[in-house]
Image (cartoon, rainbow, N blue to C red):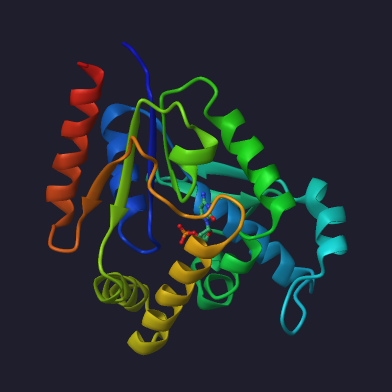
Length: 228
Ligand code: DC
């Protein structure tokens, strides 16, 4: 069976990961959450006191890059979890401490270079679904199927709020909405690999779609691409 590369980019908290993960499971592909990799670097910085009041200790972080080993493993339910140097950090990287600092980490050139190289290595045999911001533009510009997902900031903040609440975490809708808007601004405005739709990506605004609808839509795009 022919294997392809599927790149799913878009704004934060628009359900990309859910869609991408479901599709990968359905078609037996590897799923990689590239945002989790930037989150893992952010978590490392928090653990090693590499944040200053308004920035990051760049020389120290650059020197530490070879010590940051990020991998993914499936848990007992078959869900991928993020590991940093053999430690599962899946829960830690989803909290506000990491979420509010990760966009800053994602603007750093040497961090992006290291993450892109790792992502390209993970996808060298195809049969992969990767989601992020620059997958269709920078990581896999030759991907056979590229999707760019978006939804309104309010819808995305509500989804994120519901997700945190369901996990029993403390959250305020207003601060999440602020965080979503701030991340959009940083992700789209940064100098290196800013968030943008690849010319050949298919645009999906899922503001008014249910998860099963998105899932069916994505599977159809995959089948159309295979038959092309
Ligand atoms: O998808 P996410 O919210 O977990 O992403 C976390 C941050 O990492 C977000 O600020 C965007 C950034 N990111 C990126 O710059 N490039 C990627 N390929 C994936 C995520």
